[in-house]
Length: 232
Image (cartoon, rainbow, N blue to C red):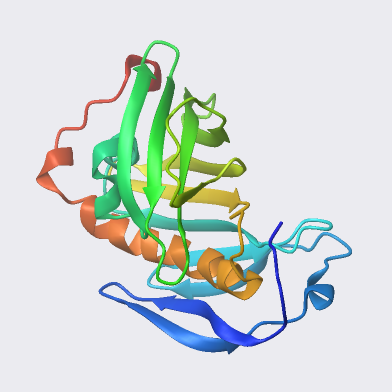
């Protein structure tokens, strides 16, 4: 998954708080020490500010996957509206420099979007095209499932295109004015990103994302959310 040339000390990990990015020095482990022989049970990696983040690995895949959850004191519809507002994604999702809606079929609950990720120097930026599917489930919860797809959207020579990505959202109504938000994700970062950076990113990014969502969700834009009919 990740090309690793040598086991040398290099800039590998990022600590990302709400206001700034700090790149710190870390030592890159050897490639042979990072092979995962068996699937792992999810581990609670972070529990802070009413946000929980679990990370886990699947068999023979050294890249962490994540599951995160929190609750917001708003109606379910308001939380869903934030996630479906593609153009404002860069305002609250860390590292997203651009998000552009390419197509949307509200009757089918399907959409495609382009996303550009602005990674810290010296890492190359990434981009991807995502196909999403919205559903209202039998229990009343709403889910949004996203997967990277190969698409004719023009590639840039200075940006690495990601082809393996999943990122799902589930919204569960707890009361009329309280919603539980759950998100899971995985991406093959491609290129030469050190594994230690990738796994730090996986642990920190969901937490920072939900922290920023906590502020975005109270934006007056979402005071009267409008959702597609199939989600009502």
